Amino acid sequence: DSGVTQTPKHLITATGQRVTLRCSPRSGDLSVYWYQQSLDQGLQFLIHYYNGEERAKGNILERFSAQQFPDLHSELNLSSLELGDSALYFCASSTLAEPQETQYFGPGTRLLVL
Amino acid sequence: AQSVTQLGSHVSVSEGALVLLRCNYSSSVPPYLFWYVQYPNQGLQLLLKYTTGATLVKGINGFEAEFKKSETSFHLTKPSAHMSDAAEYFCAVSGHNNDMRFGAGTRLTVKP
Image 1: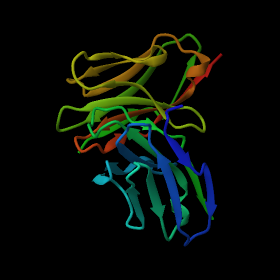
Image 2: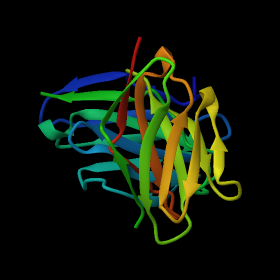
Image 3: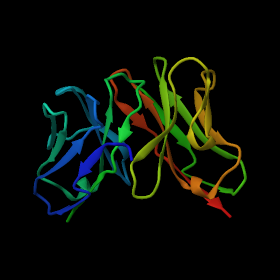
Image 4: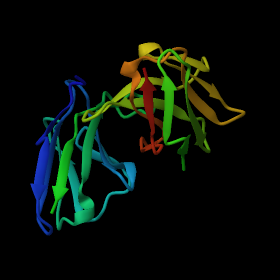
């Protein structure tokens, strides 16, 4: 158990809908990262938040957004969903925002868009 | 921009045999390199990482990796495979803005 929690574990929705994925980092960690894992694209970095502020953006679509709240939990919002958004979404956390730090991954949210 | 290439999407070894999973990186700055393991229906778990210093890095479960700058490689090895090592392994490089780039992954199968 990494100490990172993600809810829900599974999510099934329809095209065009909007969903919110939630992540709680390990106690004391200030950084949260979001990743998407799909069969065709592999593991892709989406976005990084540190202590409530966006620090880096990766291959995140404009239909996707994220935020980190004062209690340090984070939410990833996916809107106007398409079939191709079906994937496993991971969040990870680290203590600070240093690139050499270990990132601790949650168990993921499996999203299926029908 | 940093990137990694994992050679071989699928590696199969017999129990007790040497495990060698290959990773080559590309980076314009000194890289921070990681190996993660993913078991079915689970998140990723860090096996080991190279930041600075000793180029031979020891990790959990008997795995180790050697950073070779001249070959831009960070191959993962384990002297003797165990059935419990069957999983997907990911090599990753972290850029200085924390955007970790993962390889495509190598699925390790261990035959009895």
